[in-house]
Length: 450
Image 1 (cartoon, rainbow, N blue to C red):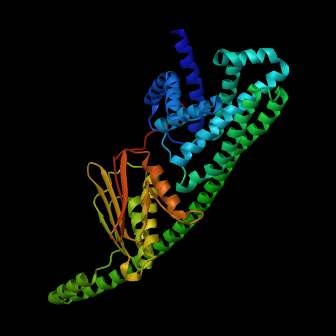
Image 2: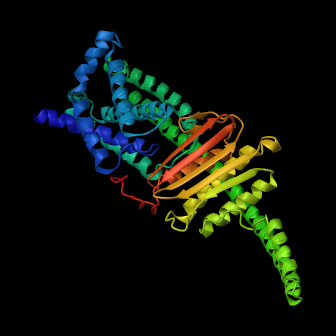
Image 3: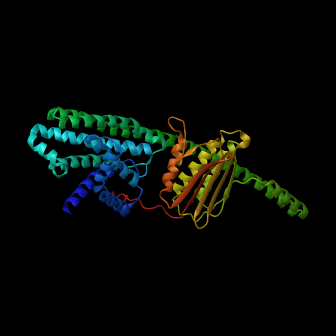
């Protein structure tokens, strides 16, 4: 019984290091205690999985060598842990797992090599006793410290669709490192290399593995800076559009004020002279001619009104037929900044898609309705687009602002109990959202709560 508990503890320590690293790059599937319950169950199941895996490998004739079989088994269980507890794409799943296990192997060889130089007999005894030895726990402690350092220095942040490519080169480097590490282990067990060679070569391989993380973070930072630059460019454009829309509204208001005074003078003259019929006819003519409105959309929510009318001005400037269906949105509790991000980005994307079409084919239809929930729908004509796993595929390198805008929308929606869907059909792209009318959830910074 005690032996099983010790073995389970050993697995838990190794897996805990893995989830520290995985959490730096991927979001969890579950939150809080549910995540940790699944983690504990997985550790318990994996404690008895070794003999079963070896039997399957033998039956299938997979990797007859001990080191190769052990490598396959360990990579498989770390990969399965990643898939079960975190949400990611296949390239990131495989690459991160390979990098992590390569790191474990390099640290193990480094520690063995260092201690062989100092005290060879004690190390050989420790290696023979494996998980019961002090050498094993030194390895685990170093792995945990390394993973914790990466997690602290690199907290998870959502990335755009192209971000998974940053793992490809790093995974190739780690695969080479794993192959060389396996060769080192075989050489040590067969007495072909000594402790000094094992130590120095393992140090070189570990350095290469550390540099793979540096490469990932550097590529990610470069991608984020490009996204921020595009966002700042869009913000400057939006401010210019706001000024232009405000100027147009002010000009229209001045014109209406001037015309209003003239109309009052004319009506007053008719009434003073007792020309009631002429006054009535003049008023009817004014009502027929008054077709333009300063406010294209009136929702009784100042933030949304300003945003919709600003985007409508931009759409009309680009010969886009834009229409709104709204109701009273004065009771919206969604944070104004999130409303601007969600509605503004989706309308920007719709305008961007429409301007690529001939002038007579440009249409945008937006619905913003508040009942029991907040319903938002944006439908626009568009060139054909391909939607893969919730992302719009693009061949642009780097991705344009459209990709970052959608990512910002999704990030804002995660704060609320919301559902969204996007689709392309018969020449129209549609993005639909249904969300609870509530304030954003409090951000939880605790590691165990995330």
